[in-house]
Length: 293
Image (cartoon, rainbow, N blue to C red):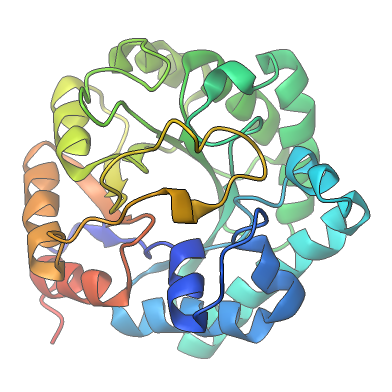
């Protein structure tokens, strides 16, 4: 199935796993501050594994995240550094694209903490403009309600670059966004904003399968799941650390690729991985879908 495009895998958890460091509330941003070479190396590892896209390490380079840690003055520098590292890895590889990650305001999986769409749009427009000189397209990640997705789409549309929308669904019921809204309530946004792709991300693989089965659209579809058992209730505010989340033991590269095959049957042609899905998983996806050795 050579028409499948292979995305990269998770960045934050891969950085932690390779460094052996204790997680902090800054998560992947900590490595932009302390070890940017490792960020570039992880991008390179994903390209070597068969990924065709490097997603910038900007998921948490957000004003509300940085102000919590007193480093809001580093917003521009960290965003530019993260984009530059992804571009350097892409250039060294000799091919591929760079996706500018725009993560959720408020906190992951907590759409009730996000600002209203009109307010969020101003922040996303600022971030998108700063990414635009480096990236091939923007990707809104882990949008967990219709209003959160709307704010991201409103803001990121200012650069005229393509925008991918990735939404996160309930781990136990993939027919619903994490807000409780039906995942199909996202579909009117496709007509209104015409994103270049719609993906399900940072949800259990089983939930990704369920969500993709619900979505009937001509917009290109994709999926990239996480490898967590569940999202703990305590993991709910800026500053929470990912060691509160339990990692699944049953998600080998082969098992993950089996889920991905189901996604492809539901029409997904953009397939990669999120948290706890690493280069070995991407290598197996590349082998299955692209025939890579």
